[in-house]
Length: 112
Length: 115
Image 1 (cartoon, rainbow over the protein chains, first blue to last red):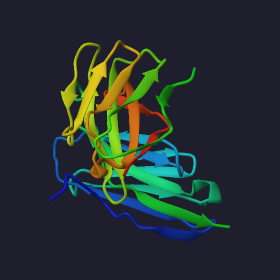
Image 2: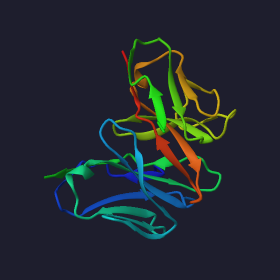
Image 3: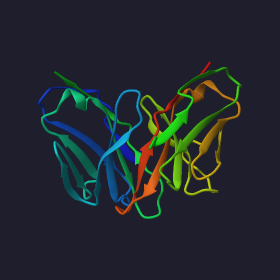
């Protein structure tokens, strides 16, 4: 079993839709959970991060972590064509751990 | 601030040729990373350097070598390129943040094709 599983999609939605992106993981030591956004032919950039369980909101984006289920989600409200990108989840145990473990990424297209 | 820069942007090699991918960061970060990204495989860590003077293997180090030349620069070398090394290569650097984890900043990538 891979440490981090992410459905690669592709996912295609109409503008204004609510998008749900998800990852599952197996390593109980993970404490920090991140979502990176990667536009076509660009490097990934950090979108949001969450520590341990709970929710975090930033504008139209909400990140959720359920450590009991080892499940994390990213919700995008009122999705826009500019949200079209690949979304990668990433996680680490924090502290002196320098390495992130990434999901494979989900390709999202928001159609006008 | 240029952030993380990578050269070259594109490269085509023949099997058995060697080349070095260059990476530099101007954010005074201690740790730097090399990843490869392949369709359906996500980002996989090749090597990383937690600080100047140290390097460690990641998930897929075979066929690669690295040099942390100084705090700014971290190069990746392919001694004898193979078609299996056709990929997009990303360099990243990370700051030790107050949040408790190292936020990684990525370069624009190098697209490498090995024929």
